[in-house]
Image (cartoon, rainbow, N blue to C red; front, side):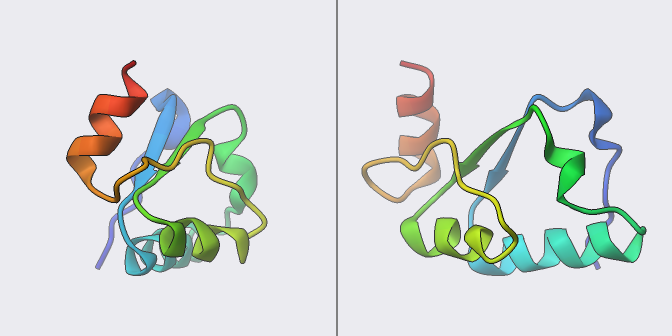
Length: 79
């Protein structure tokens, strides 16, 4: 099972898959929290499907790489 870290020290979060988005929010909700925990954090997604799954929770990705890989995400987001 996914263990939710303390998000207060995070400035960004990266979702790499639809199942990752689902696991994250399942864990978040099980702790009695909601999407407000992500206020002020940059949200990155690898791929449009991952970003679309995030929309079902009322959130938009701040960045999606042109090619859907973690390597491209890291490279492009640092430019």
